Length: 130
Image (cartoon, rainbow, N blue to C red; front, side):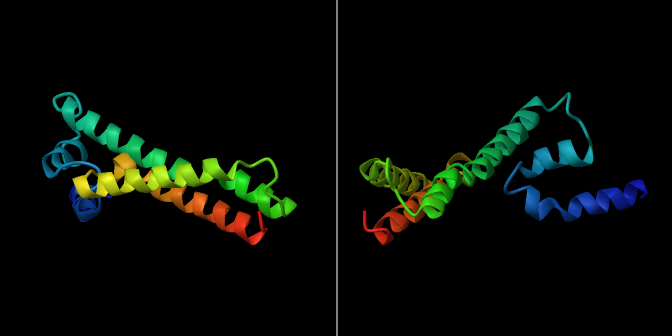
């Protein structure tokens, strides 16, 4: 792949990368010019956003073992449902706060998946009559 084809391919990713990971100026500096040394703020911005999205992805599996155990044993014995309710309420309040303040999704996105997982646990507990 020639240099101009690589630049075209990188520019094609700009709409996906620029608003979510780095600003337009940092996209130019990091992706097109490969100038990491003279743009440390861009490197920090990209690393910070990547870590945030990594946390969002990792959080999507946080409560899966609990859900699996509930489904597998058909029981919620030993689970404090009041803590699940309060945790869901906390995630909901945090989501509302961040959405209303216009925070970037990478700073609070894990709350979506954790809230959904807590709601699944709650639904399973209700279904099992506990």
